[in-house]
Length: 146
Image (cartoon, rainbow, N blue to C red; front, side, top):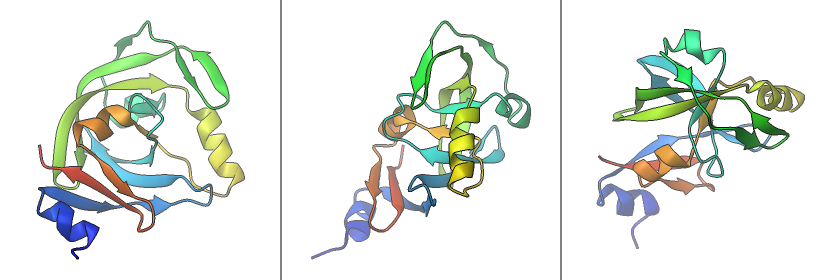
């Protein structure tokens, strides 16, 4: 019987390593606008988002959004958005719209668990686009070639 890695390789998937944090979240490095950042992988987050500090770091052009964000420990948060942002995870690349929110509550929670802060959250929008499969036991993310 073929391993999951071999089976998915035959289906045009590539594998990316995830880092499991003390908080049990998984983190991945990816590029936005050609600049590396650290992102929590969150299948429950509908959109990929970055913290307010990321506007400068990732050289984003933003516009006001009428979407109100909610998440663990925070509700009715004001948001901005950046459209058609180039995203790259290893060889895999696409353009997505990114929601910009205050992630201080997320980074504060990570700090309590002695984890480093993150630049953003990789959400279900990007995971769906890449037909993602997560192997939790081996801390791997598989994305299908676009």
